[in-house]
Length: 173
Image (cartoon, rainbow, N blue to C red):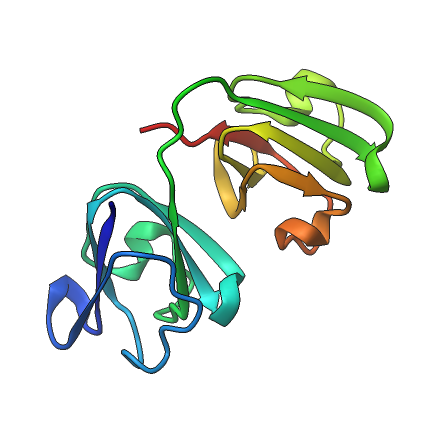
């Protein structure tokens, strides 16, 4: 069971709202979010309702200002708890949409996709085991995208605006 607390002001001040499960629309609970406390679990928070827009991965801890979770602004409109995964991790990525072109299998993190494979584009993906995050830039920086077990026929299926992947990380506890 996870628990996350959203605060309207910096440093955990003002109105707060607690959440213990996925919430597709937080807008009615607070108008802005400037600090977050993750009491338990791993969470992905989203800039827009229904798990859309910029995504931010948060582990247990305190985030006194939105810049500490790499946020661009104080807008958080939905959140998703990431279940604990025990076991192996396995993901296959593809050079083209609909699982076409060259493919590569991953079972571990990759800090620099380009250094390892000499290209950055990933157009489709099949996550067989575990929960993963794609990062737009190497060394786990830039926009983040949560990939849960399932098939993603094109990069827009995981919320990306482009096929660029700079690094890949497993979500471990």
